[in-house]
Image 1 (cartoon, rainbow, N blue to C red):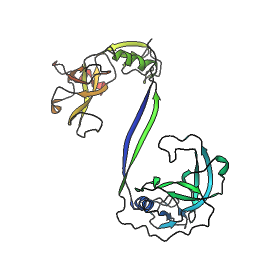
Image 2: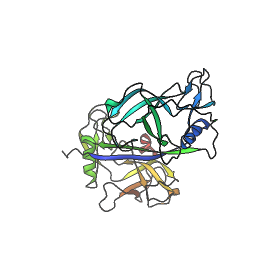
Image 3: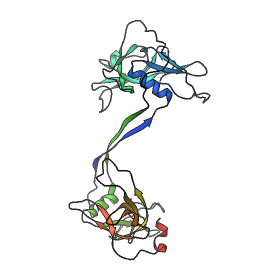
Image 4: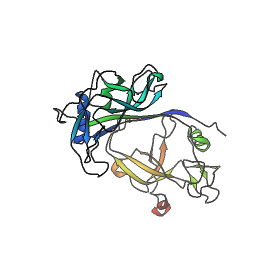
Length: 313
């Protein structure tokens, strides 16, 4: 049995979203060192603001400026800050009810230690030196023993308001494929494709998962499939991915390898994109030192009959 594999993996992408009038005003306000809340139909001031009343679900637009000072309502100490968090030294996560607001805002509190933080302590906003219109324009909160600051009367109308934001999303984790997929990956290093057969329904699943998705029973019998297969269905990709050096348009397809009862997906090459079709017979193309086929190309065989792959669409 091959060694069970594991490796660090990162899933990372920029998340782009447009802003409605309320969120646009809130984030633009932070850029201008103004904190805005929203007045609900029952008169409460919510910070951060929302676009719809949480009680009545009515659209609300009455923006209200609140003070940059407030009171800690609850907190938790962060002994070991992680990458991307507001501060690089230990700090407290706090919920702060800003003066003039009826709800609390979550952010970081820069404090020397957990013994200096308490519920009810007074704090104020520490603004970032460079502000772009994001929650990070509030660098953090800091302890404050002065008088409460009066909120202003900003209407929420700004010059050059933000209309959208790009928020990076990233997930770092260690992935272990388990026994079945470790064997599958190990076979790919020899340019072979193996699946596992269900002892009950006798179907062969590729890539294997260690259990039959239909019967729910464990699988262990390895079966080599392919290397040739049949295109069952496909799509034409017209948008170029930033991290892929592949010119568009190109075809991504589901391919039923000979002997398999589940189609896997791969890119189709060696043929104009508008000539790819269901039933096209294909074979893998490997590049030097590749861990998996770079793409599949036509074999030159006659197209497969629809009846032979209709259950694998």
